Every structure is written in structure tokens, then in C-alpha cells.
Length: 163
Image (cartoon, rainbow, N blue to C red; front, side, top):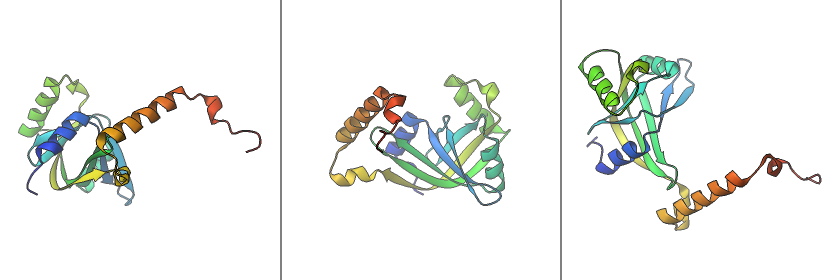
């Protein structure tokens, strides 16, 4: 891996919410949203374990992981694949706690720090772009959809009698 590009770093930092995939001991997938995801350095991502006992258990058993970060308004983002290291002490652990503390996090809730060495990264792009739309078009369509959904009530969900 040549390292995270500046655009990858920007998207991760702006979105902050990443979906971390791990593998349970029985082989089933586990997907968990992480609101503390951020960039550690040019080759690593980091997140804090606040309430992630299954994810941490899985990563301790099998450190292979994938993280997806997507801007929901433009339907673009990145997929990162790599190896996670769970930290509960040491220099990097304390450095990460300082990072989160500086950002205003209640570090008393952090049980562990997970640093992911990124081995592979690739763009994630919605198939909606195959229609020839640009980011402004996609953002406008998504915002219109969200506004329409807010205006719906439970009565809109009831099918007509002749359904």
C-alpha cells in the first residue's frame, strides 16, 4: 500500500462514521458502525472502543478487517482493508487517548484503541453515477428524497384496501 491519499484522509475525517467489518468465531460476519473512526497516519486508521465488545473480541481472534466510509449525500467513499491491532496500554494507546481528548471525547468511556494498518484501499462509488449524474445531481436527489420521507406519516405506510 502506497499510503492513504489526501482525499481518503479528508473523507474519513469529514465523515467520521465508518462501518467496521470483523469475523465472528463461528465465521459469521459482524458489521459495526464506529463514530470515532479517524486517520492515525499515512498508513493507518484508528477508532476507539466505547461499546464494541463483539468487534474487539473478533479482532483479537482474527485481526483481518474491512472499513467502509461513505458520504451519504454524494454516495461516494472508500473501502479500506487491513489488519487491526487492539491496544489497552502503551505509547500509541496514550497518544490516541490524547487525540480523542483533544477532540472533546469523554476518554473515560474508551476501553481500548484499535489501530488498523491499511493494506488495500479503493473508492466506493454508487451505481447511480452510471446514469451520467454528477455529485451535485446526486446530492440534490438524496436531499429531495430525505425531505419527502420526513413529510410522510404512518398513514402513508398503510396500503389501500384494494391492495
